[in-house]
Length: 350
Image (cartoon, rainbow, N blue to C red):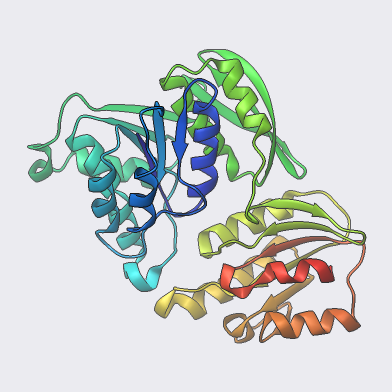
């Protein structure tokens, strides 16, 4: 059983890992985002004798939740995709996010299991080192645990780098010194670490390199996660399943790199940010200015209170009404916001 958690990219990574492992094994994996105290047990109850492996996604919005879920799952290996500013109302702070996600490392190390770590992520390396160096914890840590690193360092057994992202991400992937090219169907340079993690897991469990490359190349994202949609009038990059400050920044920075004429963004409110909400929404507007993205439509009551560039609408429905009188054409549009903003209802109008 492979356990996966993290602030952003959990579901995409879970599906990539499952796709890679399915090249060799009969794999059960979490459907959709059934990743809480109800969804995780329901997923485990689907296991049968026919399955060789399972890939289980675990989500959290308050301290202790990953420890609770990991004790149910009891994974043999696992990874944290990344840590970022999300569910701050529940976690209390970014440090709260980090300590909660690190509960997966605690679970794996204490039982001598395998941890996959993004070597390019300073937060993850720090979280792992804090556990390994904690004397009060170390007394119960098994020395048989294994740490497998992946990242951009050519010295790593599994490493890779971006070749292009216009808009699909293409990477050079190196496995045991052999180079491969992956033309993915994923949008966003932030997906490189997700692909490398899946390659690392597959490599560790003996999936041949050529089949790892095939799985990564063939995977098609679903559920409004960085999907490219071409309508009669516009090209849409729809990333409207969820949003938090970290994923919003990553999406905007990637969008700024895409070379195309007439770009614009449609951004919806981010939720569960507690006292940091006003500050974080204002940071998004400041980032738009910094990146030179001048055409922005900002939807929701949180964005409505920000100042700076952008046209503001109190709700998605009000923007939809505005679109009927002011249709957008010939544009490449990034659509990003929290799921409850219902930004996908705009697709037909674009």
